[in-house]
Picture: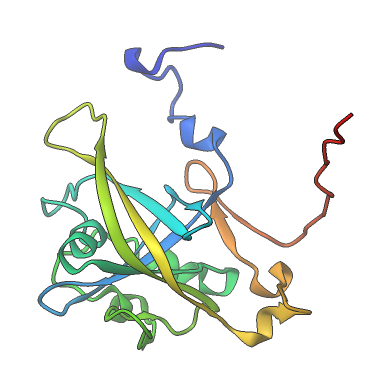
Length: 207
């Protein structure tokens, strides 16, 4: 089949996010200027540069309570955020934190998670998560949107601090089977990383 998205989707559910899979989950924690902790998962997330290390996450507007999503607004207003790794053991709490709650709600409390003090930023991180990236907000970019009142905002941040629990390190490398990270598929589906394989990268031999 073939279709042009601008003309609508000829299927019961939009297949686009079921095509670009699996997507890493940016479990973003922030602290509002009023001191309210926020936590929410974003599957439009990835690392985008090595030197210096930089990440991005993208969000639409807050349809239920208006304005920007808390993670976007907090990052812009305070200049920082934390990426917490979502794992198999934390899947229920991660999903609970996706609730479209009012701005004044602490999703750590709602999800039954423990707030831990970060090292270089003021916003807390998820104590139960084995890996965290402390980030300094860099910039936001409003990209194309069908509705000017419903922004598609991409947030970029520089990774300034990395926490890795020692128990997931084996011979100086992260053991993914110990971490058991989860990713986003399409619809209501997720995936667990429970097997891996390696391939050496080819090298071009100049004549």
